[in-house]
Amino acid sequence: MKYAELTNYIGGQATAATGNRWLDVVSPTEGSLLSRVPMSSKEDLNAAVEAALKAFGGWSKMPIKERVQVFFRYKTLLERDIESLTYLVHEENGKTLDEARAEIEKSIELTEFACAMPQLVQGELLEVSKGVECRTERFALGVVASIVPFNFPAMVPNWTIPNALVLGNTMIIKPSEQVPLSTMRLAALLKEAGLPDGVFNIVHGDRDIVEAICDHEGIEAVSFVGSTKVAKIVYKRATSNLKRCLALGGAKNHLIVLPDAHPAMTASNVAASMSGCAGQRCMAASAMVAVGPVDHIISLLCDEARKIQVGKNLGAVISPEAKVRIEGYITEAEKAGAKILVDGRNAIVEGKEGGFYVGPTVIDYVTPDMSVAKEEIFGPVISIMRTHSIDEALAIENANPYGNAASVFTQNGGFARYVMDNASAGMVGVNIGVPVPREPFSFGGWNESRFGVGDITGKSSIEFWTKLKKTTTKWNPESRTNWMS
Ligand code: NAD
Image (tube, rainbow, N blue to C red; front, side, top):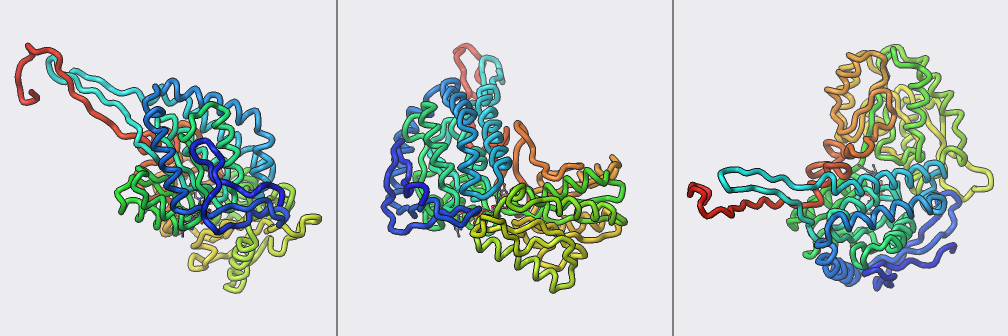
């Protein structure tokens, strides 16, 4: 085992978990044992909430311009340690080093945004009648929780940590049990940056601890990022316990390709979108809806897919179960009559035979009733459906229950506008394979890709992580008595 068994992180200290269940943390690229992660008990969660509650008074009362100084330092530390963080993300998640580095770079950008928070959250003041003023101020919620998935071990935690903490909350994070190592490193950097003990706490676990978080009376708000199945469970459970909740779920992202699309750019963008992070991105292209005669683009897409080298510029998928699931989807589509143009099944990387690899896969003549057309595959697979019109393409996109991202590839502004208006997705791209909004714009889908109000990053997150106080004052005894008196 490469790393020591993990502990929780409570009140600024490594704290042994008291649960008696452990899970292995396995390297997806080699299949070797990296570490073991404890499944914490309710008592462990109680201790973390207690530490976070204790820290809340001092932290939330500190002026935001002082709190933000910790995050200026945190940003510098992320920059200092970018290479070692990149390697750790690569090791535990299986994505390539370039993809892992991009994740740390994005974490830095997220922290930059949080550092600008004092410029965004000042209140408002207006004299609403003679001598009477109304003002608004934002207040932190208290102890909040962040539950995160396996596919971005550093970036998704950083969707929530800097914003929630700069805004004065204290936090319990529950990392993915599949990739818990990076979050531990983030905790060490936050401590080095001067974050007071107890403001940030880590409690490891799986389903049981997530349920305990949703039930815990000391926790005011729960943010969740993961699959739609679990997002629904968490959203229902947390809100039924009267907590604020924002739960981001899975995705099935459609790229609509029109015949006038720029062929080379479209092919390379579609290939990069479906294969980046081995297709394990909630923004990955999963379905390509081909409108009319686009065979020339599909042929270039296959060329691009064949150029991708598994184990070099295509990382591993997270687990042996994920590999079996993804390959099962491909086989099922083949049996149902789809045509496998590029086949990524049975990929093996020389010297890394224990790793979990699936090669890039292009499936043509998929029909909307097939599982590969409807379900999130979460692997480097693109399913092509043939249509005759933009409306037919949009009908397929709109019929899907998810709504994270959709893109259109065209050189015609009117067609692009039509898709922008009519795609049922929270994030839309024009000639962009992965239309992730960059800060200060916020991240969040529609439909079954997000439960709750608002988005998880950007300005929208301010609403989620704070509550607004409206104060009305009158200091002038001579002011006229009226209905406000
Ligand atoms: P997951 O839903 O299996 O797990 C997410 C978290 O929930 C983990 O911390 C896990 O421990 C916990 N969990 C798992 N099962 C649970 C249960 N039954 N009850 C309570 N908690 C449970 O997701 P994953 O496999 O880690 O991540 C992949 C999924 O996340 C994909 O569906 C992907 O689309 C989605 N995702 C969405 C976004 C987004 O922004 N919408 C971003 C990243 C990932």
